[in-house]
Length: 394
Ligand SMILES: *Cc1c(COP(=O)(O)O)cnc(C)c1O
Image (spheres, protein in one colour):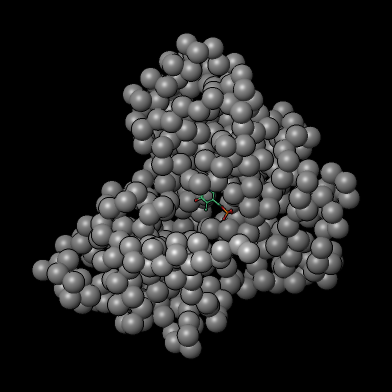
């Protein structure tokens, strides 16, 4: 008989270290406030940056798509054919991102699995920032290319890695970085990376999951933010964060996307998202193209919250985006702090290893355009109260 207590033991250990993840059940849609355990709590956890997750126009688009297209796509697109709604989303996203073409996939996670092993093999080199997202790390694991890990946002270390890969005879060199790093909110030095890539004839791939809807004109993302259109080879996107729905995509040159339609395994061997999801995504992109009002509100909210928290004496890290890590360092303290916040009506999860390195535990506050000033003041008041209780601030 298999001894299942091995799993229980691991869970007990995680609990003792403050690393057990308490998965809450929501009894309401995403939004500024949630219902959890029958109580209203202020939501500071979601990636619903622009409030699209429960937006009426997106819901109506999804309902209409069900009426027109049904609920299921039937099979993978290479076999059952691709629905016009999927193609329309890809064309609209390409226009929004100012690229030649886009491949729509089931998630941002899968988009990384789709592209990395499809374009690299044992003759190639992958150069990856040490703090890249798990979906990039797993995508890299699926490739037989040689790996070169460079220090976080360190251009000199990337140059060293490129030099080494060149010496070791790599055929292709693929540089991969997150655009916005999701745990600290810092931004990749993309301009410098592109310059280096040109010098070493390398490809540049950026995962813009937390940049879309946040950075650049109307939330076009990090490439637009640095005005690098045409200079970044591959952009990975997700439709589950600022776009508020679910899905992922690869954006780039037509030759690349045509190739991926023949070679990317999550595209070839897994059914696409439903017409309802696809239509909702399409509506979100259209709304962003019509107005940047939500993006501006998001930044106003984030700037307000961060400045108040700094005034109170909290360490909010080096974030350059609305992601606000409230640094507590000790995982047990972070876990208890989160529990106290919940008791006071605030849902803000603590984050510890392996999402961040040991000794870097925090409460990660995610600000959204849907928060009102009263919501933010409520959060600040509770952080102040509990921060004093814990002796984190004076
Ligand atoms: C969230 C995230 C993903 C995963 O996106 P999903 O669409 O939720 O699968 C991929 N990459 C980065 C950098 C992310 O932050």
